[in-house]
Length: 247
View 1 (tube, one colour):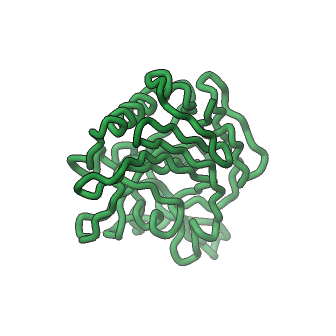
View 2: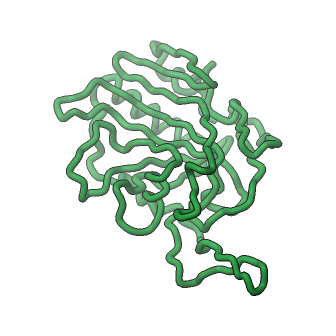
View 3: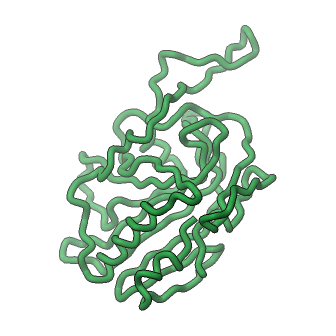
């Protein structure tokens, strides 16, 4: 997907360091843009019997931009990258998203918006109702060969951060979190009379999509912008080449 050479072309003075598990860090002055390596999502953390998840998440990573705290305490922003079938059943790909505190919370964080790993808090944030967190950036697919907007946006934020101009977003959420919604299905309920799942029309739909139950074969993205998708044979194995990497 996004490799560091695309970011540093516009900033030759940038310092690039490779991190663990295919992660990397780009530093310019006091600004630091970091991509973590991919982390496998444990099914028992993402979904439980009492609180089913709206879709599968195979792995996740974090893209964060940090600066020294300004006089308001603001230290930057971070977004989540989830490898999931968040918009269409069995269609796995990387998605960019981010989260925010609900307006009712009095606690103000130093990062806004911020990334969350796939767990109970983020699961609640993408579900219906009022919760501690909510989606601040719509689940946006990252498509090979069509990453110009992503690259330009993060390069612009990095440039602002390097010159001390990165500020807390003027409004949250910055983009309509429901902009990427597709037709969703409610969670399935087992119909013992017919031995199959049926859909409960009374159940409110998730802001993202209906429950996934069966194991899926993930398709990972090669880091090259011109490469094709690569199929990985194990459900919880995501190739390191599926994330942006350092050159």
